[in-house]
Length: 59
Image 1 (cartoon, rainbow, N blue to C red):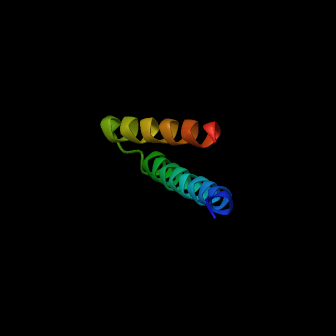
Image 2 (image 1 turned 90 degrees about the vertical axis):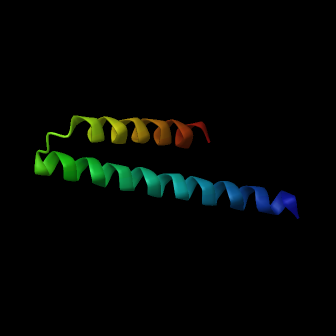
């Protein structure tokens, strides 16, 4: 049973990470479009994108 669930779990985790990455990217585009001066928020989002991208690539 766990043999079957492992690939399914991995696909779900990968899809979830892609979803998060897309969400973070949309947020970054919104910040750029609005030309906000909130450097701190943009830095946090860049960090989150970077961490999520590396987790996704490690799968």
